[in-house]
Image 1 (tube, rainbow, N blue to C red):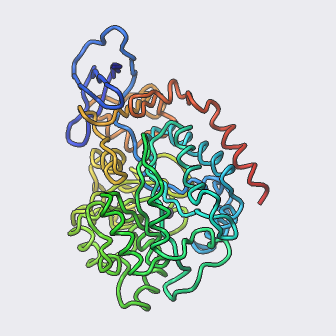
Image 2: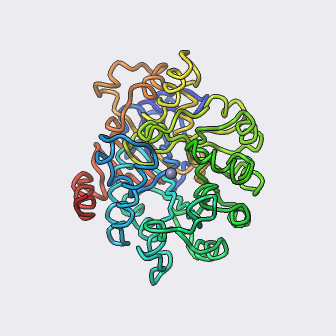
Image 3: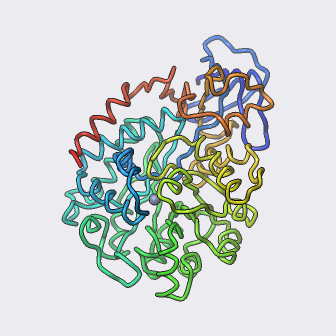
Length: 445
Ligand SMILES: [Zn+2]
């Protein structure tokens, strides 16, 4: 049993900010939450405002090595992808362990307590399985353990180079299992354990044909596991899908049984009105990654329309151009302001809910509220920082969403264990040095 006493705490969407909140924890879960309480002897004091753990719904850990190296030039998603493939080609299980450990530690410092890793870098650079066919996935599991965050390993099926059925080539041969049956067998061999959920991924309608998509969906259904897919990030994907199948990617995914309440569509940027209605009616979640989408000049997704149609929204830092879920949260609103020339599309409470509860649900975790029975994730922000100074309790959520940064996170508790204290990572120590070592090890590019 441990006890945490928060000066202020946001209890979850629609539940407001309370003062002097005592959170009692048994094992990894919250046992009791008491508002207006005095701190009992032995309680850990959390100065500032405490919120539930942030969920990073979509990550490619190795993209962290591209930060600062791809922004200067021109081009688009497709030219950026060539650079990304160069990094992918340089990774082996040991290097990936170091890079992912440091990247997940950066996430912990930013208040992220669970990450969904969209993992398709399965095999060696020649496309041959490692001695343990899940060695790369296990490196990610170990990395999350070192960084002290929970991992949803979204083991992703990736079978072909395009809708015309072209075979995987070059860097892509690492991604492929040959067919969906082989994917299912390999992914099914990963054992869930404390802090790890195994989920299913369909890379995209480009990379997985409808019959294979159906196999992946059935695998996820049998396990009641989350299922994630990239959807309509690029107009070119829509055009190719329409040309090859006569359907939009959303309609094609739907016809293969991929949509539904355990499914999360990542990006969902270029949708038709019918696509929006289809995602909403099936309660398919949508993971928006605005800092990546703007970095790659993808476009602005119809977030308000999706939420109105019935799709829960969550957030991901995806390519890790930055790792800051407060920045992702406000970007959802601010991008729609720029596109519509109107303010007030999303309530701050709902945006913080996307960063917490909705993301945890998309990743398969009982977390995201400060409430009994939930995993005990407590993220505390320093209200004396220059960005947050002057915040009053009744406006604190607005100020968090529109002005906080990852640098304001001072303490992080994950499943009842403190991982960050006084902005210091208690397990990794110097996270900057760890990132520098891991990225330098990939060699000059
Ligand atoms: Zn992605």
